[in-house]
Length: 79
Image (cartoon, rainbow, N blue to C red):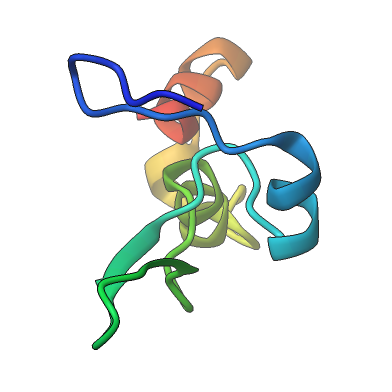
């Protein structure tokens, strides 16, 4: 596996699945005392779309959404 000129590398699918890394997951890189790089998922970091859904959950009848079309509401969720 090679690192691109932009410093990018593809994490193999089997490794992503085993680590529970989904698209748009937030990760952190740690270098241990032996110089090994460890990639860990950040706990509590929700993807932006999930955060938007959490914000909107149970509020479809809130006055800020009254009169909003479906397209406008979806645009709000997508940011």
